[in-house]
Amino acid sequence: MRAFRSFAVLLLLYGITAVPAFLLPGKVILQHATAESVEVHWEPPDILDEPYDSRIEPYNHALDLAQGRAEAHPDDLAPPYLLRHPWRLVAPYTSAHGRELAVAPLRGVSWPNGVRTPFTITPEVRRARNSTAELMAVLELDPGPLADDRVFGAGIDPERNLVILDVNAFDQELRRRLAREYGSDLVTLRWDPWGGPAVLLLDRQPPPADRTSA
Image (tube, rainbow, N blue to C red; front, side, top):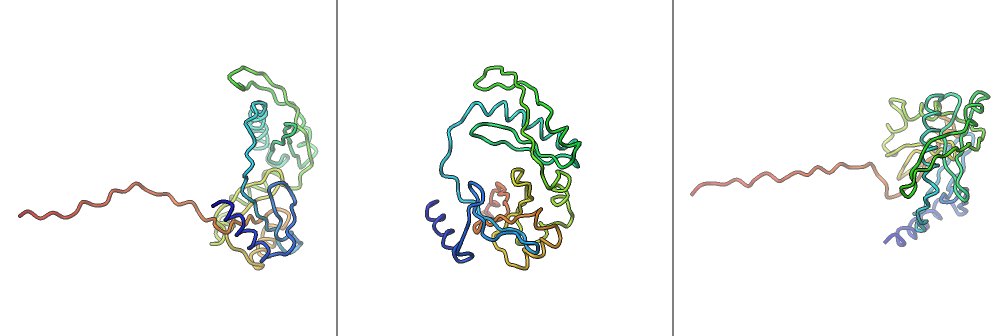
């Protein structure tokens, strides 16, 4: 079923653009960002699950520390993220003070395979365009992009330093409006033709049938 859906999506892709381009692993750019329009991309299903690597555990703990640091200094730092092969923690910064904060080593203790393992991880620092504060400001707007019926989810892609808006349909008017309101270097549309808002299913028991006594 997954293979069929992937094939169907590929057919839809060619109906949108004849030349899809892989920009990053796991992402296909359908329409590139311009000064007037935001980007649209699609994420194929991940069918090659890599085995668990216990070496990630110290980096997971360090990532939590780096995220706390970014939240404490939202105007100077951007959201951090992990890279693998080899494992490393990237701490993006947006100011000179942010770079000083980002490069500071992160220390703690993790328990890979139940073994107490102290760690000291020095982040790899990179310059970022958008700060944590700028990215979060889009998500916290009321009303914000989620007020559009075509947008059913939102989040942040730390590696690409962008706000992601999930849509199951889009048009050029939406791309242009988002670029005008937020900037085409701040927002990207993630297209999922079968996506939709989460629905909470309540466990309701049907009312008892009316009974009449004889």
